Length: 132
Image (cartoon, rainbow, N blue to C red; front, side, top):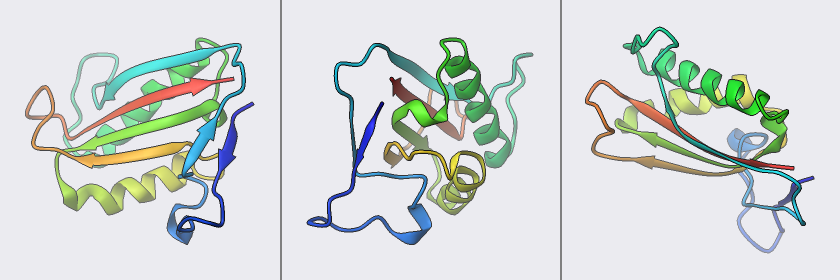
């Protein structure tokens, strides 16, 4: 099982991020590692959602589906990287993460605001590493 590391000798995880962020995650001789390519807000029919929130939920649903294909869950996520094209979407991302993936064992997280993704209509991309 992944072991979360938040030692008291470094800055504490803020209250808004407890349950959705941890400083580091260790795996000891994992039986399974699963690397999920960046998932975007495009539904199975190929429709790109317009709003950031809808794109984020669609990308998260894709991650959840991919995890389930190898009998893993959100608790098995050890690293998540969020790529956003607009800084003003950071508060919405935090709320969505708390509502959808909060309360699970928090992964190590990096969030980046970047100039663009592969297509101009993409607002968020989520990359995940999971293991058990």
